[in-house]
Length: 452
Image 1 (cartoon, rainbow, N blue to C red):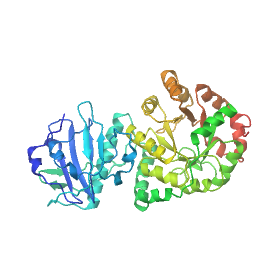
Image 2: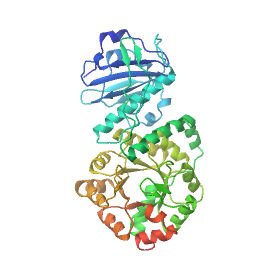
Image 3: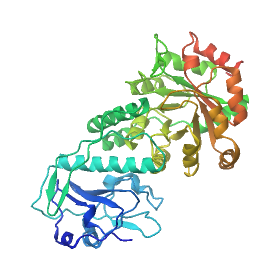
Image 4: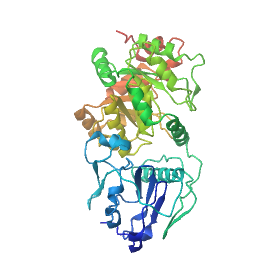
């Protein structure tokens, strides 16, 4: 089904740089549409889509003007496996095809060009705010369709804009988070926005040229299980958590990391969130530069691919992707980014629906089962067994995916329980970081030495 615009739209010019055109649902024939808008930024005319049923298809009005398009927001799945989609800001002269529904295909030809002149004008900053609002709105709709309850931080957006026969006024939702995870995500959204302003992606890519090589995170876990017969330990360097408060007052991340390695840890997980976990990327970087040989997982609430690049520049060998806050398209895209950068992706789930979503995504080698409900922070280690029973467990074995048990693991009996369920690695923090001697804490956790 092609979205047919109101005839009045055929006479509308494209806005000049920094401009905005928006068309409410009355301009389209399909009842599924709510709005369709274009936001211009310097040398780059990009657009985002939002609908209750994807996708929108190119209208005849857009077809006439497609030479003026150079790039797309990444939120729509690329059909091709080409990594060119990963560098949206440098893809001049290439054609991209994006998946539609069963009724058709959305295609935009990327060619260098500038927008046509228009008498309507808003600032570049306003246009970028509109585009961000639309992308966030689109992500929330996709998230809702996949059972994701965590929403992105609402944007107030720009004031009302009149553009020819059309107008645009972003809706403003409530600004109160529903639970701790949503509060963390909203805080992370602000942090990432500010960091990207100071350290744009282009700068990070240049820094990567001098970064240390990555270590084999997945291979280390496989080797450890084969050698010891018990799940490989990903020991967590964590000072505090929202549910437990400060876990260790005398917190020296490098000394703790060295103690973990001495005690037999296979890999390390380093908390980098500052506000809620008292972590930092400086801790990650310090551990990497300390001579510790264990591969490092950047334990961060990743909502933007920029964070993956940033983690890589700080010495990460792997990153955490949380299915509770990331739609499928984001996970697919970020897994590709990780592969491009040589990083492992630990994709975390905590219920059946999230597990089913993740098992439907190609290229995933590590799945973490979090026994802690990330909304209520209650822990139930039987969650691991529940998610690995039946067909799901068979699919995991067929794909050769390593399952990591997370949260609520304090005793040898806990380790044995999740191992019997099918876990081949465990991520443990609280029960060992609180010990005066973390290496001895590892012995007590497993009931024996594992450092051989």
